[in-house]
Length: 316
Image (tube, rainbow, N blue to C red; front, side, top):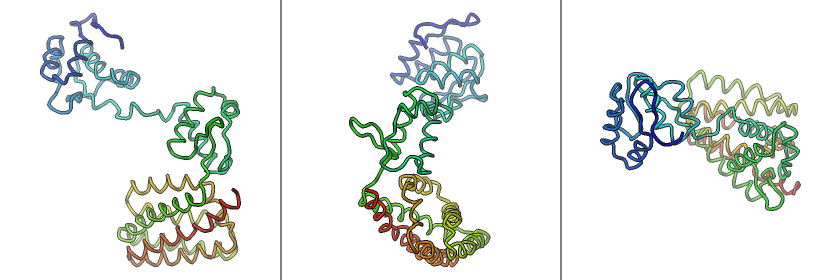
C-alpha cells in the first residue's frame, strides 16, 4: 500500500502515514485518538492487549484479510482502513498468523513436495546432483521456483548445496548415519515409553494384531509386505504416544534416512531379526512397562546402525 491520506469518498480521511509512525513508536493512546478523529469510533478497537491485536464482536472483512495476507507489514493499516470504510468491527487476530509462510498452494511449495517424494522413494538417490534445468522442464516451470524449492529442502537438510556443483541429495557419511540413528532411536524410545503408559486396551489389542500378522511375512521373506507391516506398527506406536512434537521430529529424522531405510531389509536375516526385536518391544508395550519399551525400541533402531553404515561404505 502506498503512503499518504486515503479518502473513502463516504467518510473522513484516514491518515496511513501518521498511524504507521505512531504504531512503530508504540504510542497506543495516540493511535486510539487518531482512529477516533478519522471516524474509527464507529467500532471499538482494543489496544490494551498486544499492539496490533484488535477486539471486536465480528471478525475482519474477508477482503481485508485476503489483501492483508498479500501486503505483509501493511496488514495492520489495511485492517483499520477496511474498518473505516465498512464501519464494522475489525479483529486483526482474524488475519491468518502464517501469512509470512509459503502458501501450500504456491509453485515452489508444490515442487518441494514433489522433490521430497522423489527423494523418499529413491527416484532421486543419495548424492545425486539435482539438475535445475531438467527439473524446470520436467515440471513446466522456470528455474526460479525450482531454486526456491531446493532452498526449502536444504533447510530440511534433505539436499545440500555444493559450490560450483549446485544442489545434491543429502548423503550422510557412515558416522553421520550412525549419529542420525542414535538420535532417531532416542526419539522413538521416548515415543515407546509414552505409548506404553498411555495405550488403551483397544490400542494394545490392535498392536498385537499388527505384530502377529507380520510373523509369516518375516518367515517367508515377503520383504515389501513386511515393510508395510513394520511401518504400520511403528506409526501405531507414534500415534499412541500422544505427543505430536516428538512425532514430527521422528518424521523429519526418518526423511533424512529415507534413501537408506528402504534397503535395510535387503540384508540377509534382517526380516527375522526385526520380527524378534518387535516381539520384545510389543511385549513391553502390552505390559505397560515404559522403561522396557523405551529400551527395546532404542535397541531396535540403533541396532540397525551397522547395517546402515555398511550400506554407506559399500555405496561410497
